[in-house]
Length: 263
Image 1: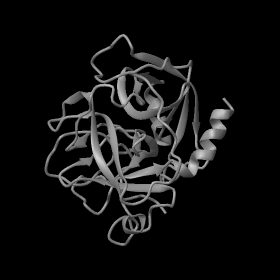
Image 2: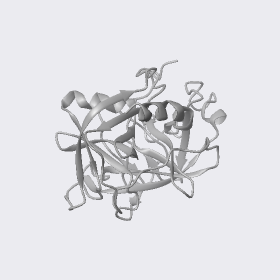
Image 3: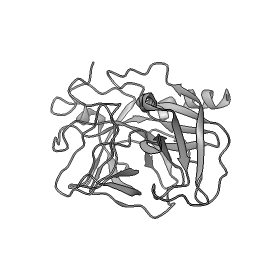
């Protein structure tokens, strides 16, 4: 079951008002867009992590432990161009506030069954070289207490480009809704290419994740939880039959806890 028709990956944030759904890019080409998003209130998502290569944002992530970042397994490939580094406490990529914290990656743990062709088990944990200092700008995102079903209102966020291709330095966000997996996997949509550990979602008409920022969290619940890890979408933003897909976190909760416990 290969996702041969898609470019596997990255999703982020740009304001482009006419398109509906979500493309991706080859996992090694992580550009960033969001269609119809808005600038997030500064530090309203203190769990957000910018994973960077050579000082440039390449993937998103979520801080789930004082020394661990949850992200997508395919984001590991971005390290081919240089070592991954993690930055927390950010709102703008162009500013270095006093509460910004920079880390090197001491250890990366891809899920052992990750398949880069099918994008199954596209989940990874990155161990930071030291503990983060938690404050108002840097906090942890909780793991999910349950699997979030169809109709759940959620959100995604990330750093991305504007519609004219210029990078927007600020964190942007987009409200989305979890879709029914049977519909997403139907013959008119992903046609059986999705697995039970994947989640598909959709923004309002005229808004959509597009390229970049894979690895960022799909956040659900009044008390924010990491319901998913942004994984992939179709290569064409105008393909309404290919909603973006995240790796559902709840099925991997035991694996995550095992990795954290073995720290």
